[in-house]
Length: 555
Image 1 (cartoon, rainbow, N blue to C red):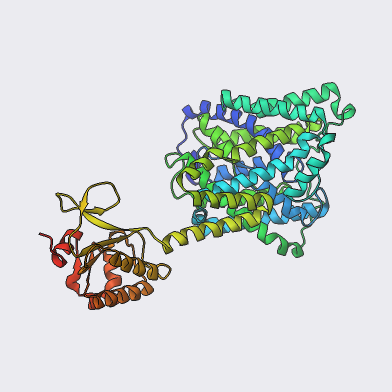
Image 2 (tube, rainbow, N blue to C red):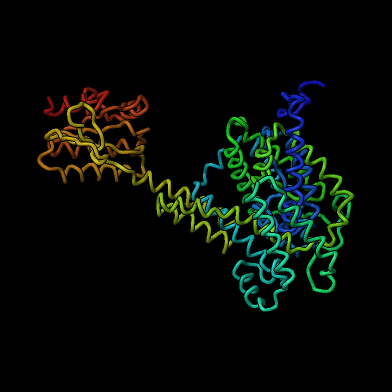
């Protein structure tokens, strides 16, 4: 076979890999079957469409992707957005809902292909980790609230998180005991299996066990336990899906939200695997593969797909050596989806709801929130704001707010950068921050100022004011002011003008200015901004010590 026909992840395949890959495939099937069924229901689609989404996405990624253990498929992170967007066009199960889901999935897939082709994977870096944690926690709350009526055996009410919660509290007295018991049992099995060994198929055991229980006891008939009911075998039908261009306007915003979530989750999943497993720089290729997979799944009657962190973790933990593990899993799932779904008719929805609630607990990273709180309260506040907006306003709005918060936080930090005065470490020529705990001494009449940021239009005035503040608060007269430029990456035109103003204001007080440790980039900015003409080229020094000796009284 010509080498170009072999997928990148299989080109160095060895016969010794087969055993490990087949074992990983079986483990993946055990996890993927219940999770893909549950995720499809979360997206408002027939349960089996999740299986077809997994098969199509896996086959496409196996041909185009780069990661050896990387898994894709229907994903609970984007499923609520898909469901909400399509439901805004038509009721779940209606022809308008189906057509909206088709158009939305095609739009998401196309945008991901464009993002991959144009190498836009760097967009994932526009969300800080605390904000990502908040967004995922908000999505987790949204999933739990959506599934509460299901696991309690109650009819769903409302379209917002608050309305759904109100409906649950109003109807709580009518909760179905069998549904609650099935959900609790499923959660115990899933969580217990995870605690014993992450490779144990707890979700599959819970789904099979609850199905057998319902069928054997006739709970769906005699006790009102909601089940999947009749499941159509074969590929999903597209006969009722006729997307209208008029729907496009309402679907663009959620499509962009989903694309951003896909980019962020794909990048995070690759980062967790590590560069030794997933080649660096392959994010864009993976996005393109996921986009093509989404288009293929949509055209075959399913919906948009995404990177799957839990499935990826399973394949990695079980020792998958190549994409053959995922491809073998897809080969096992496909005949099940085509010909063996009749047994799913007695599958209780409470078991699927419990599966999704467990997934939500994995998205809600309480430990990470505690770690953020210990690090910085402001970063925690950003995470909590993202959480609240996503959970109680909407995922689309939450992602937009999260992006703005991330950018605003970073802008605030560079607009009000950290700075300090330096002191000479006693008995040396080293100049260090005076607040690091080591003994330092000052040279009479000389201040050495360090700012940890580029000087740009957002902070130029602040930096000048801080420099003058240090001069005003100095003990004794100041005759020279040295700027340590080691932490300054660049200076823009506004920054240059501000420094020229600082030079004049210091000169008016009889204080000379010197600059130490400027990089060649900063030197370029100083030269072309005419600051060197005012300060003097002889006032540029390679080290703080030399600058202080030249302008001060140090011996």
